[in-house]
Length: 81
Image (cartoon, rainbow, N blue to C red; front, top):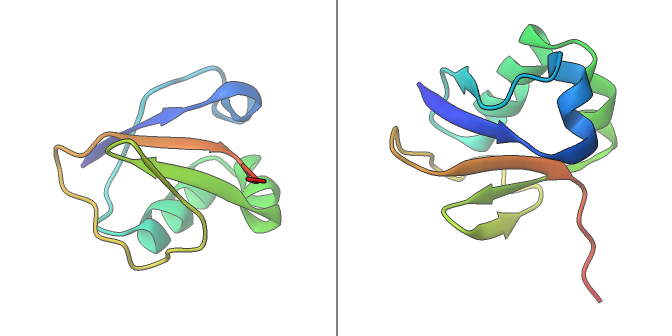
């Protein structure tokens, strides 16, 4: 299990819960399980979200490994410029 901090406007889809525990070893599993557990998140995830893993932001890095002690934050999609 990994504790996932739900950031900002996404928290409303988890009934305000943050962090939430998710049984996942990579980003794809994590997003799939979040979509199952919190159906309101599914459209947001399909549109695109960013994940921060131990301080580094990822987008569409489906098979990035997540350790049980990793710091994971789910955020609305972040675009850089």
